[in-house]
Image 1: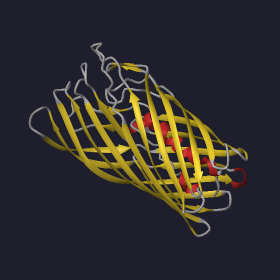
Image 2: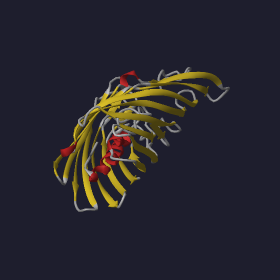
Image 3: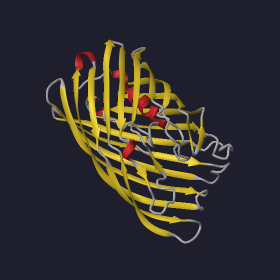
Image 4: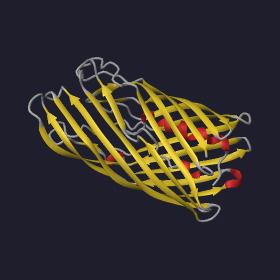
Length: 350
């Protein structure tokens, strides 16, 4: 399983692209590390600077409601014999952070976070066909306040659930060509909740199912110094909702449509130790009604990054600018928003 050595920055750029992807998604949940050669340890962090604001139903300015946040990730991959490989991947696949300070939504806030550990193994059926599969253990928790709805508050305690990953890849190592298709199942959790309307607490439970998804990832060498790579990602967001037991508004967050995100990039080796990559990303604006806790719709992004190699260590850094799609409806109008993402990744061949 081979890839051009200077392509290590591709995964970093792809993950940075998902600063504001469909739904509450924050990573592409790729298993691309499986295709690295030998034993590899990777770890990295990204920092998002979103700028999201709008006008509420009373035509009042909402102010910037999108705090900055960090993301962390890590992975370890090793070969087990000539035909098997094993990888352990940590990421933070879902998240939402909102905090309104003005207008009708003043005091409205949400903080949803998650983490996941995926263990996945691969088998080389031949020098060109690889099959892989494994399991994911995912944890999620959330808090929210919506003063406009009777002073509503909710806390959903942490809970964890299992899902699975399955896929296959076709590759021609000589030209660094690979096409990989990956399916991820839903993950269901049941959270103990505490709700209130500024008075006595109301205990309960809330079921949450994060959506199934399909990744189609590809790369090919154009010449010995140039690689083209990209991905198409479908997520079943139309089946997702966050619905606390007594919230009067129904779902805190839900979506009427699935999402498909596209990313395309070019990597080029500049010298024996330095390479560069550029990417573009796109997710169509579906013109759905905004939610105060999910007010943007689709995006277009441009990114760039560098990878520096020092012996068995690769250091990759990247930045991405995201134009966030406009949305308008009963919850208000949110337009001309953007986000900036930065990432730093270390890869060590062991």
